[in-house]
Image (cartoon, rainbow over all chains, first blue to last red; front, side, top):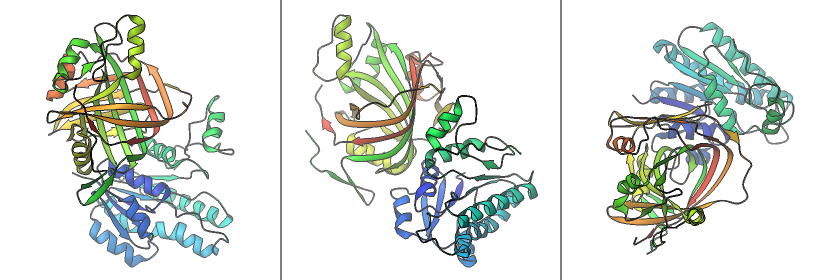
Amino acid sequence: MRRTALVAGAANGIGALAARRLAAAAWDVVAVDTDEDGLAATALRSPNTHVRTCDITETKDVADILGVTGAVHRLVLAPPPPPAAPEPPVDEVMREAFLGPVNLLRAALPGMLERGAGEVIVIVPAAASPASAAAAAAAGAYVEALADEHRGRGVAFRCASPPAGAPARLVLDEIERSLARPGEVRVAPGPRPGPLRGPLRRVLFGPGTAGTSAPR
Amino acid sequence: MTSAAQVHPIQGHEVALPVKIRDAAVASAMFAVPAAAAQAVIAYSGLEIAEPWPGRAICSLAFVRYADGDLGPYHEFAVAFLVRPPGTPPPSGRLGRLRGMRGVGAFIHWLPVNQEFTLECGRSIWGFPKELADIPMDLAGRVKRCAVQVGGRTAVEVAVRPGAPMPGGAGAPKVDAYSCLDGVTRRTPWTLAPSDVRMRPGGAKVTLGDHPVAEELRALGLDRARALSSTTVGHLSMSFDPAEEVAP
């Protein structure tokens, strides 16, 4: 049976790469974004990628997508592109980077819980400003609370918070590895810390990236 | 003869050459196999196996995830042999053999893929021996793993353990890829730009199934064979030029 992945924020950046990797692995991919041209580029020459142009902050749009997608086995919520300067108001940042993903998650999760299987991956935006830091913290706390609430029901929750400038391919690799470690929720991309790995981590991911994956 | 058309209509898309691959990841292993047996496997191409050591040839097994490229996203597995360029005499002596390895190409003997768009592109543009298969792959883990399943039967499973980081090379290596489909042998100039490369001696495990290609590989002694070396590439960009027919 082909598995279905729903990838929001799939028009560019890490969301586009996540969608393409899943398509390469023969998943049926539903790529969602408001950027129609970006979605077309993501789905180019990929017959198993289906694009849906919509705003996930709109409850009706999300319901429409879930209505035609069928069972979702993996939900990937990738961050929107960083806001252009000057940064939009805080409520707009929260709406895009927190409330939109929550909207889609709340719509897709009941089906996963009912089937007793699924993977929810939330990639929070790098904290480029106080507003985006607040959105990232809220998303992380929300995913952790969901993971606690639904522990043991077959759905894996991961929340990745890559530092700014972290290569998307390494972030996705770390998320993929974390899915093999049951119970882990927070994913901090990069090599695991060790006596020789701190410098390597700084080379790959930039300074100030001393976080670790926190087993729960 | 170089392909006249530089744009190929495939499934409603126009595929322009050279085809560009912007992001791929690879794991591969090289094995020393009996040259006579390897020559028998590729005899249909008319090409000659390269022998870096007397009586020994090189067989390479590789698995690739194409994440971003002109052929769409897909997984691929390759069985390849190092071959001498057509028309070159067999080198003699130890130094001659080493010098002879400089111009060797890679003959692609089997190239299963898991998507139909790249299948048609590969066969019609370059004559690559692509066929459809299920190719589950794990390139995120410490040990990179791949399996090829055709019609529900496992043909081959390969696991590649991590090696030591290699320094970045200058420039992009150019290799000639050879293929033979429907009796036509072709040469395709192929440029690679790898980064995040790791390499080690040995480091690969091959398990063969019951597919006809698995039987060929078993006859070469590859079932659970020790690799000469294995390599992983975290990021690879590539370019494939038009194919040229060659008369070995």
